[in-house]
Length: 264
Image (cartoon, rainbow, N blue to C red):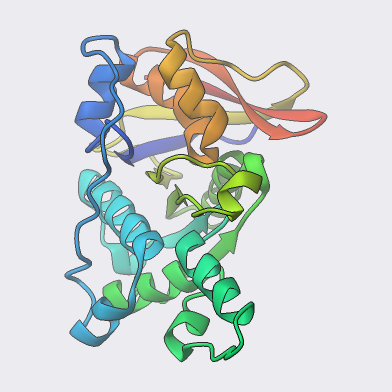
């Protein structure tokens, strides 16, 4: 059973060797070789100065990804229902909290504490944009991107409007990295709508299946797909970059995958 057709109005990518969607699309089309490069996270200028000083890499990544997708769609961020999904949230902050709790002092910073909740990026998004639309924060280990996409499409289909998906991951420092080795930060943003508009670049339908997940022919991109949950989106992003019609299968649950059919 498939979802109703949903339209892609805006798309953004920020990750290693992918400074924006145009750079990512060139790599995914094979026009430029993919090479890992540091991810530059801009300050969140939309936040008041006090909040801006408090945010870490996870919020900066989520905000940059979300704003780029909204700009590409020509949408009003204040009106968009939103879904923020991440496998670990602010991994640096988690490491620092555990480091303090393992010390003799065990004095947790209030700022670190309030940034530790999984919906912190969604909260900062509301402050930055004034958005009071429905907001969901979720995680699903390596299925996080597919879960976020399915949640966003369901929201859009239910209310007949538009919604924003922001999928983002940051890396744990050691020793947590040894248990959850995500090597680089990466974010993917999508503005999806129930109605086609002048901004719509593709039509999407989702369905569940038990087929194997699609993989990347390029070894470096496949390594990225396997090690960063947000990068499980790469087969879909490659199909969108190519601009044609097709179907890809994304990692979801152990015995269930998420198929995405794309039409121009």
